[in-house]
Length: 197
Image (tube, rainbow, N blue to C red; front, side):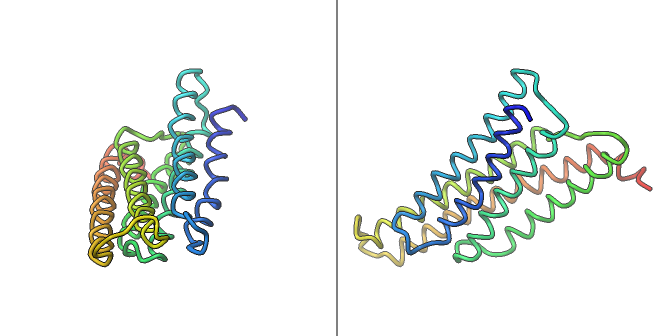
């Protein structure tokens, strides 16, 4: 296994750790720890692709595993947000539906001996999703600082409501990119669907 693929596997290994801290409000600064781990995992996504292209280490395994790791990372974050009351289920449902549709196209292509790599819209989708997760985690950590007595809000209920709205805006922006990238992806590879038996 080459270095880019090892970084991809590291991203998968980090997922349970940020999920653990995200769902452990009894641990002080748990949002910050989850954010740091998520940031490290996100950086491996940038790094593995950069190294693979620079050193000509692109493999079929990497083409499949890299987007899979991204999906698991984002799905895990969204599922945790739902459990924590930070977003609704619709965001996850739309995101999952897009990913299942694109993965189905990939499987059809694989059955014909073709490997379909991610396109630029897929990368924009991933960046928008990671950005949304970052924003939600940062805002929740700021609010956590209030609950820990480190900072003070004159109207914490209003601040919490605004933080929720801002987080939702970023999450729904990512949903828009998710839908656009999915539609473009299916359109560009429609021949695989049309000729599937």
